Each structure stands twice: as C-alpha cells, then as structure tokens.
Figure (cartoon, rainbow, N blue to C red):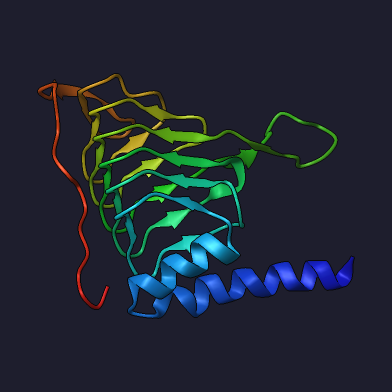
Length: 180
C-alpha cells in the first residue's frame, strides 16, 4: 500500500512541478493522456503551469483550451466540452467539506460540467457542482455558485446574469502559443 501511495504522489508531483513547466504541448498532452489518464479531445491544449489534484476524473473535448496558471481540482471530476476557452488563473473546484458534520471534518465532492462553446474570463472561480451550459460566458473575477443557463453571460460575486449571447455558435476555440 505504501508503495502504491508513493507512486501516486510521485506522479502528481511530476505532473504539477515538472510536466506543467515543459514548453511542449506534445509532451504535456502525452503525460496527461497516458500517465494521468485524462480524456482529452483532438486539437485541445492545456497551457503551462496548470495544477491538477488527482489522476483520472478529467474530460476535455475537441478544440478546447485551458490557458496558463489554472487550478483544476478534479477530485470530483471536471467535464469540459468542445470549443471551450478557459482564461488564465481560473480556479475550478469540485470538492469541499461538510461543515455541518459534528463528528468528523469530512470531505464531499461534486463534479463540475462546462458545456460546449463556454468562455470563462480571467480569475473566475467555479464552485463544486456547477454546470455552465452551452454558450455560457463567465466574466473575469466572477464567483460562480449556481448553474449558468445556456447562452447566458454572468458576472460578479456571486455571479448573476447580466446579458445573453447569440445562439448557433460554430467557431473553433483552439489556441496554442509556441512556448506555452
């Protein structure tokens, strides 16, 4: 058991302290797909300095991008659809603690789902259990505590609807910088 725990912790250390600093999309995606067992679609990219909490529990669709320095707490599973753009420094949480448990400080997990054609602005925070539906937009610095309706623009703390977006999106959100 101790050897298995050591191997798991070593894999996470390499993921978050070495792999995520190597300026090669090809190598990083190989590591994430093969060793971390993430499901990552074609022409997707995860830029440098992104931090994950565990192996597995991560799905990312085609042509989506996660920009640098994002923290992805995938203990409760993160699903990212196709043509999604997640800006720099975004925090996605899937786990918390049951603050009302009087016996133990027990953790609880809720998956986050980010559907197709979503855009998340810089330094937004997505809390456990949230679903951002197709075409949703999260403004920079927003804290999303509840589901976002399709094609709705939300902003603020807590995030509230401030507008809508056109339907029928067909763009390709792929984005890769050479040394990112």
